[in-house]
Image 1: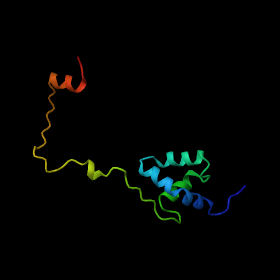
Image 2: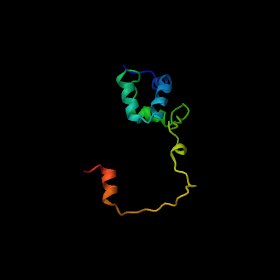
Image 3: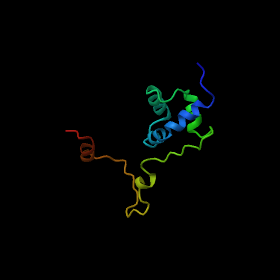
Image 4: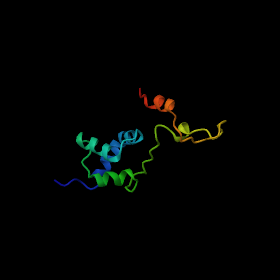
Amino acid sequence: MQKDRGFARVEFIANQPEILEQLRKGHTRRAVYDELASKGKITMSYQRFCHYVSGKGRTKRVSVQPVVSIESTSVSASSSKPFDHNNQVTEETRHRLLGDE
């Protein structure tokens, strides 16, 4: 049975909140697609799914913001100590880092 023209778009829009949430959590497009397809929520092809996620379809582009912003995890540039890479590892440091006995 052939689906009506535009049915994939309807499926995408109906599931868009869930799609956005999963992408924001860091799931891949493939993982989101597979999950929705296994639940029977979408029947479109993966190619068409990616088409809508990337904004090439007749819906607005899906803007996915990460749950953790880069700014909150960045190291402050105004550190009081300059960076000094010491590539010499002492026995004490090796035991502390690796937990060797």
